[in-house]
Length: 131
Image 1 (tube, rainbow, N blue to C red):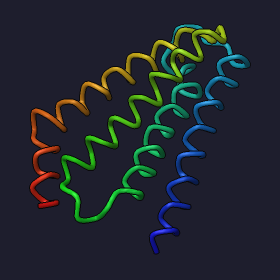
Image 2 (cartoon, rainbow, N blue to C red; image 1 turned 180 degrees about the vertical axis):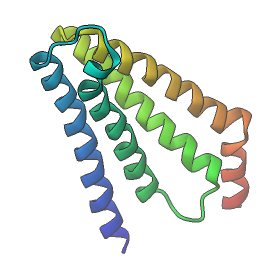
Image 3 (cartoon, rainbow, N blue to C red; image 1 turned 30 degrees about the vertical axis):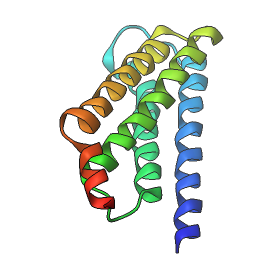
């Protein structure tokens, strides 16, 4: 059962990365004229990739871990992935809608992970559950 969760987690993470690269492809091929509706095909793969990466992390975490610890690690992995994706898309010359959005959301996810792990006590709850 443990190996099955690892395979599912890897599959969800690969799907999340593929959706991130789909947003790069769409930003090259679709014209963005400043309206929200024209941005939806570019932004929706980013949103679904965040959800897919979160599911990948939740699948690989142990079920008896505290909730704030699991969601903190989920936010940290999603934030690091989006932050590095934002830097990559900036150097690829993609439209600012993709690189700035993923860069800023990545920073916000990393900040949310710090809040969950340190301020809300996710790490201390994890240590208490292990002892």
